[in-house]
Length: 211
Image (cartoon, rainbow, N blue to C red; front, side, top):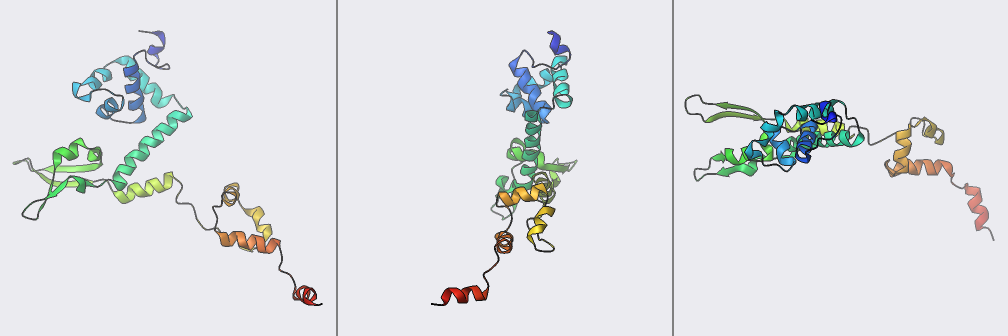
């Protein structure tokens, strides 16, 4: 075993083992990690890798010690992928309507799909083995979490209390950045421009119209 493999702070010599460890550290399950690493998960390779101490040390290090921006963004993307499955995935893709008009769920296709992880609870009849109850993760909760992660809960409208140009000084850096990017409503910008450039007086107009 190479020296760095004893602590897990360097990439593993085997590219396949390293790819698998990276996916596991992102939070994917064993079989999904194997698939994402380009391995054949039907061979049980993921179980073999899990039993290797050097692979486990590498996974542990990546989960706890690697704080690079790339790793952080990859883990965030994994969380978003999981929430998007719950929020927008539809199990009706695997439902057929029989001649009797009753819906039937293709459990095999569902189990092999990416929506399998959205099933939160299954209950089986102990005599027949048929499914008698199924519950999936809440789509509304997933949407709420995605909104929070992506900052969609922040206010879209910003109203000034006094309505003067001086109130700009009270805005936060984030609000000023949104103004620069065109993020605030046009009527707010119009208010600022109107106050910065006062309308001409009536007597000024009258002087311009005199011969």
